[in-house]
Image 1 (cartoon, one colour):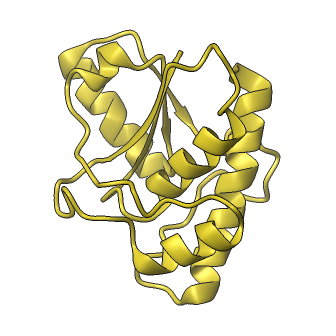
Image 2 (cartoon, helix red, strand yellow; image 1 turned 90 degrees about the vertical axis):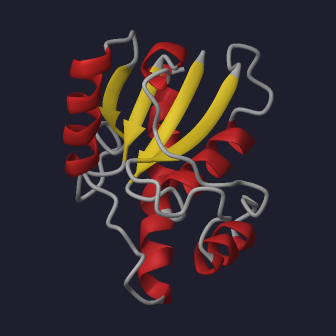
Length: 150
């Protein structure tokens, strides 16, 4: 099973989700690949946002080794599940999949999490508390993903 997490630029939310998932699923033999990507290519090759790195590492999920990349057409064929962080990510992914096809199921990360919201807010322009809030929602979403799909 291959899982991809997607946000707008792949430096805050989706690498955090990748980091949480790779720790939670480290001993799951069904998982072949866990990755993350962005809708846009603005940050391609960059490490995750420093604040998100600090929040994730403090919670036991280091992500400093990850590097941003853009979603590709082949992602829709290579991944079984693609989880977007918000409804705009989902709309963008569905539009790309309509053009490129592929087997991937495109889903909202918080869809089955039972959170007060169904979207992980983008903390990029917010303060430290916004990163903490987004990270906690991501952790909740990944836990829900594991229960519901893995």
